[in-house]
Structures are given as structure tokens and as C-alpha cells.
Image 1 (cartoon, one colour):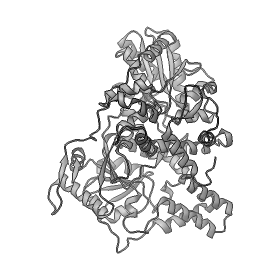
Image 2 (image 1 turned 90 degrees about the vertical axis):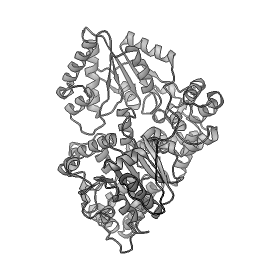
Image 3 (image 1 turned 30 degrees about the vertical axis):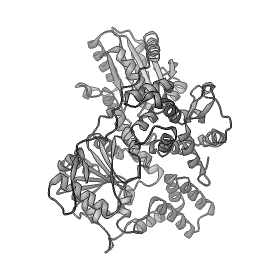
Image 4 (image 1 turned 90 degrees about the horizontal axis):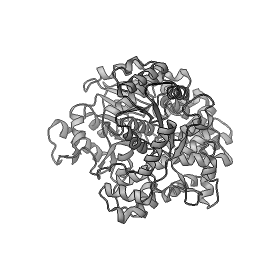
Length: 619
């Protein structure tokens, strides 16, 4: 067996954090625990048993069919009520250990001696394999705070990220529960008890290697936390690892976007247990007959080195000129579409006279927490507890460096109230007399577009000049391929067509296994968790925001798949009320040479057909 050296070292130093998904619980005995779909279908049946309206049951089944499991659970909860809903969960998930349960994988996991195991599961399976492990839930703030100090290989903790069946009030099951934990939108102050858990989760992802197992990487909320950390750390945080059965997922789907190395095993059940025991032996010594152990000499996947960003001198010069003449610029691009890459190249024109602002994406963070995060790791950051203090902090830093100073807002995260206040204070910096001339560059997407059109008050966003970052050309794709060690002249045309010139999709392609032929690249991208996740989240977000009928992304996708005309992007002026614009910022559509709105690439078409083919998918 081969094990990545960095994973072996993390296990040996008791640093690895196993992240155990539902697949592990379901494997202890067939039929003991339901899958997500089985659990939700059971809820629909319970609604029938209770004589609830057929229309309500049909709506729950609709959501299950379209893969919107969180909304299905939300609807079932509203119809059944808390008492009947919780009683059903107890019946299905509060299970005694069967005498013939196969705990080989659980026991092998504990042979890694992790101080903490993290799980989104609700059941007791992890405790069956280690009776002295202590369960901790998100609302136990004191226990979470003590976990780093008190958890050890001898006194381990199981952090129930989504709650435990023994404390039903802690369960994160329905859509509103997920928003409460992960901060999907602005939350009321009563949800602030979960802020500590979310901050700790992100810090652990940044600082500790996770070992994912029994996890399908289909949970959009968990994936967003991974993306958040990668954005803040620029991909330089500790790599994690995913144990997957051979052939389940492509390596390129995890490494470029989530910094997760794929480690494959032969099969579920005993082969996985053997794999885990082999990993423990590689870390702690000892031998087992019939198991040959070796440690890989690499700590990251043996993929081609990621090339430097492709120079786009014409764009860089144009954007720099606008900044020097008008002192601010908003760059708009689809998600992972290259706005931040261009911002870095523009910033290079200012040398060290640059400050990068990265707002925290934490629900209900205070003004002090928000401003301290913006101040970064500067020694004086602890004194920055307000927007006024932040302005003073930025002025002092710029004065030390002299001349013109560029401030780059790398993300649009955080509560809208704080982002609005930040916009006002940055505008004040730009307009007030100063020995240093400030320039402001905002690398944005959908949120920045909304602020540009809806900010009615004095703000750096209000009436700011803006530019849309164009997709990569065929020649730029060729340069990117050449820089990555591929034959750009041979493959540029096919890769450009397969990715639609989207930088994020291009990086994903180069990190995956397989040829660069158009059909092969399209097949891999159509299975991509990030592309499929963006598509499904776009549809679900429309529903949460009550965009229906012609105002929905589903209606636009349906027309495009049928070859029908939809609104052109340019006249819509980046107004996110239009579904075409929302699809653009998600990276799913683009503008062709004639100005028509078209699907980004064939992979998007395949993923959209699959998503919309589910029966009774609602607009």
C-alpha cells in the first residue's frame, strides 16, 4: 500500500482530523441507517401516515426528485411539526448497536489515534468504536473552546458538526438549519451561538490536514467553507486528503479548487479497514502479515506545476490607467473567472505600496471583528476595532510607504451592513485631502454588481468605473498550456472550446487525469462537483429569493437547451435581477462573438440537462 508522506506524518504527529461522512455509518450493517434520500422518503411516508394533505407530500417528493434535500426536510418539518418530526428522527437514527455490526472500519479509524474526529452524521457509530470518546455539539461553546487544549489520543472528542440524535435541538437537517450554521445569508442575532463553531471549522481547515472518508463532496455548504479558506490563504493552507473508492471521482475535481489530494482504496468495508490499519502502521510502526507498506515521496498529487498567470498586458495597462486617473475601479467577472488574478498583476505595478483587504465571511460578526480581519496580520491590527480606526490604520501604513497607494478589496464577503460601511469609509479616504493618493481596486462578482446599482449613499461603489474581465482567448489558453508543460499549439483550440475560456475550468482541467481532447475534457468537467454544485446552488438560490417563471435561472436554462433566444447580457448592465446575469456570474453562461447569451460550454449543457431532467423540477 502507498500512503502520501505528508498524511503519514500528520497521523504520526496526531494532527490529522478525520471527517467522517454518512457512507461510514451506512457500512456497519446494511439497512441500519438510511441514506439522505431514504430518510427524506421516510418523512414523506410519515406525512402520509399522519393524514397530511397529498399536495404537501407531493411537494416534498418534488424536492427530493430535484435533489433539493434541505428544502424537502424544511417542508416536512413544517407539515409534521416539531414533535412528530423529531420522533421520526429518533426512530430512524437513535439505534442500538446491532450484535452483528461490522465495526472494522470504525475500529481501524481509531487506530490512527486522532484527538478529534469531526462528523456531519447524527448517529452514535463513531462512539461504538471508542466508548470513552466525548461527543461535542456546536452549541457547547465552552467545550469547543477547550477542545484544542483537552482533546488528545487518550481522551478524544467527536465533534458533531450537524448535531447529535441525543440532543435534537442541535440537529442541522433542514435548509434554515444550514443557513444558521454556515451563514448562507444575513442571520438574526439569535443565531450567533454558531459563529464560534463556524470560525473554528474554518481555522481548522486552514491549519490542520483533514482526512475525508464516507463523504461524497456534494454538500454545497461544506464545500463553500473549503473555498473560503482557499481564498483567504491563496491555496497555501495545509493540504487535506480524501479517501475514495477507486473510480468514484476524478483527482482534478478536488485538488485545484479545494486543495484536497485524492487517495484511493480498492473497495468499501474490509478493504477500507485494511487500508486504514496500514496507514496506522506506516505512521506508528509495526507490521501486519500480508500487507506491504510504502510511503509516497510526494505530499501533493503528481500534477503538472501550475503555471504563472498568463500576462494580459493590454488589460493590465487599461486598468492601471483608470486607477491613476479615476482612483477606483470595479472588476467584474464570473466566479473563478480571473478577476483576482488580474488584480494581482495590476497590483504589481504599485510594488509594495499595496494593501489587500479580505473581509471575513462570518455570519453576525461585529464591527470590531470585521475590521480586525480587514487589518490582517499587522502587529497593530488588534487595536483596529471600528471603521474609523481601520481608516486611520490604512492611512498610517500608506504614509510610511509614500506616493500613491493601492487598496485591493479581494472579496465581497461579510454582512451587507459592514460591506456598506466599508464602502462609505473607503470613499471618504479617496476624497479627503491626504499626503498619499489612494486608489481602490475591487475584484468582484455578483455582490459588487448589486452594490454598483443599488448603493444610494456616498460609497466607493457608487458610480464607480467598472470593467468586465473577458474570457481567455485561444492564444491565452495556449500560453497557459505551454506554461503548464503541455503542447499549447496542439491543444489550445480544443481546451478553449471545452472550457469556454473560463480560467477556473481551465485550471481544473489541467489538474485532472486524462487527455486534453475536447470530448474527454467535457466529460470530466460535466462530472465536476464544483460545476454541478454551482448549477444546483443557482437554482436553489432562485427559489429562496422567490425568482419564479421567466425571472428564474431554470427558465433561461430551459430556453437555451431548446435553442431559443434569451436576453443578451450587455443591455442588462450587470443587474442581478435578471436571471441571465445571475447565470453569468455563476460562470454558466457567456456572451458569444455576436453578443448573444449562450451556455458556457458543452459540459454546462450536459450538467444542466441532467439537473432539469429530474421529474417535476420546479422553476
